Image 1 (cartoon, rainbow, N blue to C red):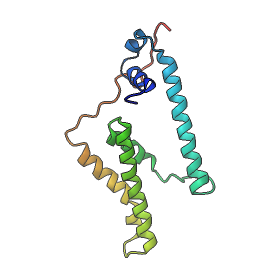
Image 2: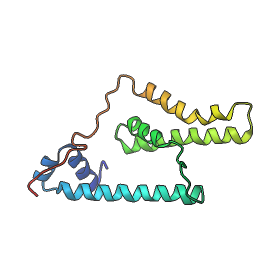
Image 3: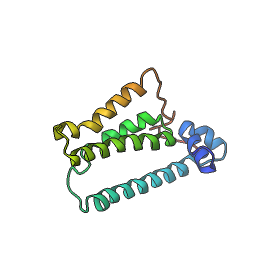
Image 4: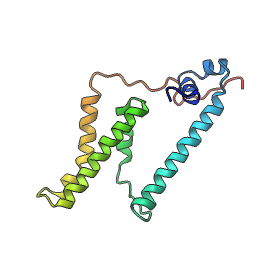
Amino acid sequence: LFRTRFGLRLRAVGENPAIAYAAGVSPSLIRYIAAALAGMLAAVGGAHLSLGIAGTWSEGMTAGRGFIAIALVIFSRWNPLRAIVGALIFGGAVVLQLQLQARGIGVSPFFLDMLPYVLTVLVLLVWGRGVRHVAPASLGRVYFGTE
């Protein structure tokens, strides 16, 4: 994302598609490729969750972890390297919760179930204090260029 041709084009299209178009980059093509890649990654993640971990699909199997994913975007400040670190931290909280339950410590399982979410809120409170989170300037805007 920071050193490849596609990554730089993707960042340029996210910030200002008109300038990217003026530089010879097709914003529509880059956005379609990015959406296709995101869809493929989401499909692989969903397949791994339902088939690799649980062995079958059941309703509510994510247990509200989508909110942790949204918090991860805020935590990472739109940086994929920070997102990897944050995913390891938040995933580690889920694993810690499961390990503590398996070891049978004398704490209520309901308290342990909320451990990853409490950690998420605490990290956002500490990490987000006094920091301005800036999303790409053209996020969610339709580009009506001369393509």
